[in-house]
Length: 219
Image (cartoon, rainbow, N blue to C red; front, side):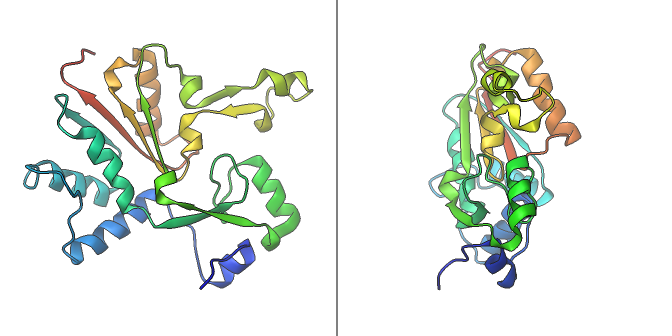
């Protein structure tokens, strides 16, 4: 059976929008009921780390994986894509994988307002819904979140116009999983900024976020 190609076809099929955390929770419950191995190849954490991660996913939490180097933190984070759906629909051509039913991108909102259910959609597989960044001291908030694009301003757009933004790594992983490796190597101001996003839920971009860092790296 072919996949829907427009928002209207998607709606007619009975699909609805759900968050990444709801999606992961649903798929984790299904795997647990089938007694499937959640993290293939991860040995020794069956009675410690894995149950805690399962509880966090079921509770809809973001995670910080703490441990020495070589303790499979990154491998665990990458394995979490197996809890995502095989593929999800997005508004075709959107930079931030916008949901056809709940768009946040001004371009996508405008297209849907103008063309309604005729707007084309695309399908992205789970392996394209994972983003990862190795933390270095020179990373800025604009690298992760985004910043005003001076070229768009020079073309005549106002600074307040949403279309002037150049999206960072986190928005580009919208509706996916984003991992920052070696979290303590980020500047303190960057860590506080990201913590505020996770703590207060002020980000408009819907993703499950992970910070992986080693105890051998100083804060």
